[in-house]
Image 1: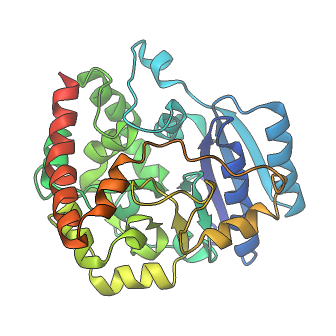
Image 2: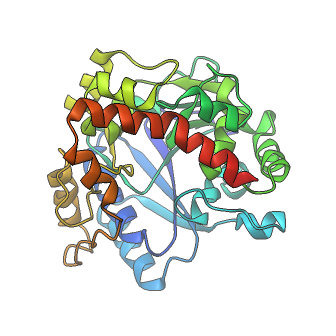
Image 3: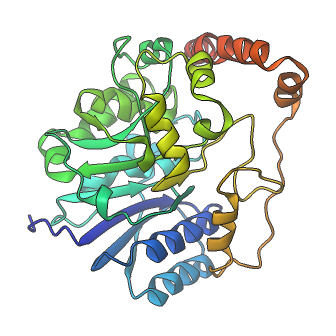
Length: 334
């Protein structure tokens, strides 16, 4: 293995063609705000990105004099000869399960980023984070104990958001993480709550160092107050209110995760606190003239939520989120 260089970051994304534009905006933000890194190499696990979009992504790397390379993504359904069902997103997300076999062998650490993030401050601090002997660093996610039961975890085990993962590839390989992930998917017949993230949570729960939420500031932090998050999600363990406030006011990475209460940055009429930052990087990208997306989601949830008193709406939504959704997932598997 190559020796660790604190000023040479290796960043991994996974994308299909639909999200190539979103990836491009993320790349601009990464390069623009990480100029204090001597080297940045980006590996894109490619699930069918078009030639045109590849050229645009390459042009972003060339503009900032950074290295970018495309690696064909492993198709999970073909790999396992079974129909792996989606709980969310697209099959391209499963590509990150194969970081140990698809990336160059000499890497000992990588930072995986979802396409729907923007980097607000340099990744240098995160890149050099001490993992306290764990295999990955990730955000402690706010899910109820019933989500844990659905993926064979104990009620107070760690569940993390896999959209930003600092990965010790040496430990990942030594512990046969990839094989264990595939075994879990096979045991669940390809039907897993939260798809690839659910599989990652089962295998890596005990091997996760929960870093500060400022490194993965997710949408729920902005849609709800701290006490509303606890009421809505009912997590058995979570960060302090001060840590969440810091993640809102001084984020290093903003993650535009899905939320029934708000639109994502590339969707028309988004009201997210950091949507203007996303637009700033879009306007610096080869996609500056593309139209924002239409919001094609059903609006009935938000309409009902907004007609009720806020406290009552949070309580009802909390019942559906903490109890109803895990139950639906359990029945869905049957």
